[in-house]
Length: 405
Image (cartoon, rainbow, N blue to C red; front, side):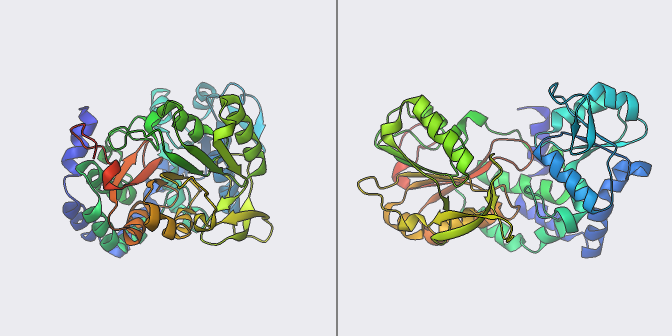
């Protein structure tokens, strides 16, 4: 175990101690802390910002800052393709050039989800003030929160009872440790509270919990371009009963079909250009031609088809394994599959990181639908991201000693 993991294990020993520490801070104190946290790092440069990361998160942060009347100085990025260009009207510098120009006169906000390496890079380049984007989101919470799994600490206080209930229903110590670590990280953004992530290769397919079955019928909700299908096919060695993929973004769906064809598994895959949710019909949707495409309420959003999994005609292929990564619509998708879950008890792999509260709400929702499921939590990236709740029927659970139930 690394030194950081040892420290995390010590600090995050029990949920009881974390809750006690949270409640020792008054509501006024937490509101003041969340509002002032970014300025404590930025100091006199709270309006002199360099956004490190000119991808989707960086561009979304720039858009929000402009709404707040703040114009960053520039982007910085490690992508050679972007260097010397402009992104949304801001020049993009290399890390070294940005540090040379602004290390002593700006605050660098790392707008990358897995940003620890970049924060270290900037510190090594002599940048005096380097901030996690979540601190900036707390400061401008009326614009940014909730978004990207980030919410305000004060709202977490109101949900501690649900957190404690979730803690009591998950199935192993690793899952309970995830809850404690996440409560501490989300309340204080304390990086030292976090143990390392699981192997990203095992996302949705945890070898310690589930063994492949050659008869499995896999349902991919949020199929994107077929990346999870490829991973499933590799983990299962190409041996499975059938595969269903649902993807509402037309361009993503076209790439998904092309990639399925390239894998040579067309005859075993049914692709449907549709979202999944709690109702069948039309859904307002923002197609971004990426993994970030999502449902929306704005009238300007396009309409796409949406279906309840309970309404799908599965024929001879009853689902045995369902993955849901649907950009915060996971509770709707689960509610739309309640009868399917009660009848067939498929393994579930459901993302919990799109909204902060989903970490405990999604396990509790699954538990309310099928109390017999064994529930587990795993995280495959830094901070709160790429976290998944697994719901596994007892007969499919691979036990810690290697014996399959």
